Image 1: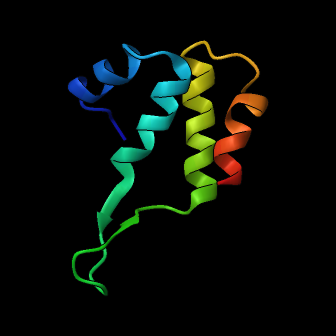
Image 2 (image 1 turned 45 degrees about the vertical axis):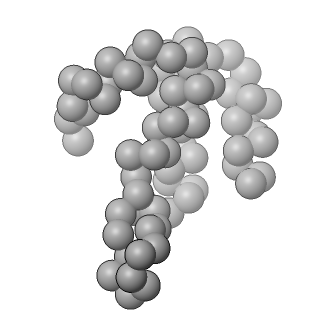
Length: 73
C-alpha cells in the first residue's frame, strides 16, 4: 500500500510514539452490520505490528516498553 503524501508528512512530522498512536486512525471503516459504528479494518495484532514497525522506522527506541502499554489496552 502506498501512503498518500499528506498522511506520510503528518506521520513523519510527529515524534515516533505519537506517530505510531495516530497511525491507527487510518484503519477505521464503517461496520455494515451495525449502523453508525466503526470497526478496525484489520485485526489488532496486525495493526500493532505495523505501529511497532512505524515507531522503529521513525527512530523510536525500546519499542517493546513504549508500545507495550498500547498492546495491553
